[in-house]
Image (cartoon, rainbow, N blue to C red; front, side):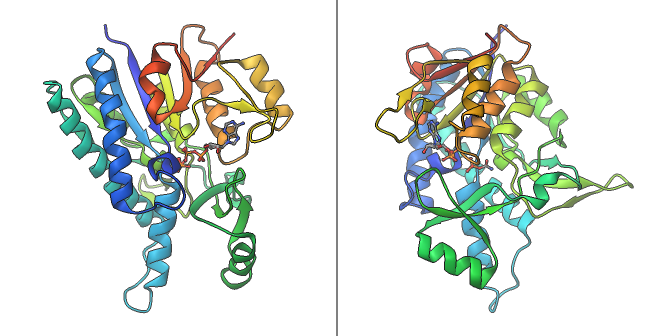
Length: 314
Ligand SMILES: Nc1ncnc2c1ncn2[C@@H]1O[C@H](COP(=O)(O)OP(=O)(O)O)[C@@H](O)[C@H]1O
Ligand SMILES: NC(=O)OP(=O)(O)O
């Protein structure tokens, strides 16, 4: 039986640097990334794809708010759904092309996915998820004053708006994903899924939040019984003393070491910390499962054990 991989693509990584936030620039990065994903598919792995949406959903919100005098602003959850739509469309188009080039005939499709969160998740009172563009410190202070945004410094790259990021509890469309999984490459749980709460009568209502896609991908990986959780971002390896002269890149990371580094504050909240935590959750109790954190470009090499950070139970 083929081994299963859930591949999580970083929202920032797909934007190819903070200054190039156009749809065209994203498509370029997606095309390149899909060549690697097609190679992984040709190696015989069954693949499911999850993508981030932090920069994208933030920009859609911003555009919607800015245009509110011309057309009514879109609610937050609808902006999340829009981000799933266009990122999924880019991946579908690029991945199908890359697979066709390799004579690999496998359907690729996107499922607009809702993810249930808890109404009382403490995250609603403590926003941590960076979204949208990067700002200078001065711009950030101005936005806090004029728009009431909560702004934080994001891993040495500038200031960003942060919003609530509740934990994903249930993927509403999981049965559809599982049904399609063996015969297709399914793009699902984009941006962690559109956050919804479950009402008493069985209906769902969207909420203003952005789920962390690393936790969403981890939940999906558990649900489909994946062998690997591969988290692709901008850096080749997880580091300690990140961005300092004594930065040390890590090739392996055990749960014990990860706990120690988290205690030391080595992984930035809202960026590297959720990736490490999602990886830890995936491998906990499973000596045979592996989580890999690496860059988009290094996906194939990391799977062969040549680079990346491999997070394992022990
Ligand atoms: N300890 C660390 N090791 C490596 N990268 C780190 C670390 N702490 C923070 N980072 C930053 O986290 C970024 C990944 O988070 P982010 O950009 O939010 O991911 P995504 O690609 O999923 O959007 C890296 O590109 C790097 O700038
Ligand atoms: N939703 C989410 O986690 O997006 P990023 O990967 O862009 O942070």
